[in-house]
Amino acid sequence: MEQLSAGKKLDRAFEKLGKKNTLSFELDLDTDVASLKALDAKSEPAPGEEMPDEAAKLINGAKITLTVQSRKPIEESGEKDLVGMAMKISSPDGDLAEYRVIGDYAYVRADTETLGKLTGSPAPAADDLPPEAGAIKDMLEGKWVKFNTKDMKKAAAEGQKAQGGPAAAPSLDAKTQKKLVEALRGVVAREVRFTTADGENGTEHVAATAPFRTLITELFGEIRPLAKGLPPGMELPTEKDLKDAPDSKVTADFTLKNGELTEVDVDLARLAENAKVKKLGLTLRVSDGTRPTAPAGAKELNLKELMQGFIGAAMSDADFGESGFSDQDFPQG
Image (cartoon, rainbow, N blue to C red; front, side, top):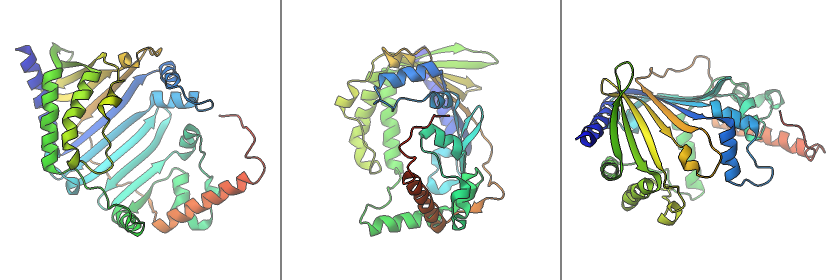
């Protein structure tokens, strides 16, 4: 009886999420630098391609926040119903990148200096770009810039057509979405074990446990017959690909308050198998969120400026490469 009631409570919690018009999700990686370095070592990176300590520290403290707002309840919404979206990647030292879509405009800002250190590809200095770069300079300085999404989509479609490429990938249709959800629910009902427990401050916990390899093999097995309805480019792993996945049991802890989902915690340390991982988890927090707004003072970035900015950056890199310094090793900050 507990199995049924626990699963039903979780089912109803997700149904409540679908009836909201605005939702916010915060994803937090619960780990440490040593565990990230151990996972990187297990992947056997090529010499010189190992994860830098700076990158491990940044990933360890990074958070991703996503907020969506729709005219209709989320479960009934298509792309045209979304009136606002905001995504932010942040670290303990500040925001790394942020992206918002309000109406016909997308707004972007980024800490290009920090991201350049993380990727090993430093961005050009704003002062090195020509005056024609326009809003590109603002972007490199971490300021907000904006562009018209309709113009960008039109230009992308024209570019694909001129090159003889495929048209833009269609979104998942409602019929396929419904079949997908029904198939996934069937797998969960067969393979996932549910238990409940009371938490603090009137919360309730629903724990869902399943062997990882068995679960994902069955999930993709159900999805594969629906592949024709999926957008082009979505490659599904084969059964052979999934054979190497660890089959350790993984538990997701769902926190409910007044029947609504507020948090999901997943301990992934067991999936690391023989890697020396002490701490590896994911935490997803769910809330009603706040309405995404357009930032003030954002300069408009058009395609011409964007291309000029890239050309200017490429020329700067070429000059640097011919200067005789490109072969020297510099200490990493």
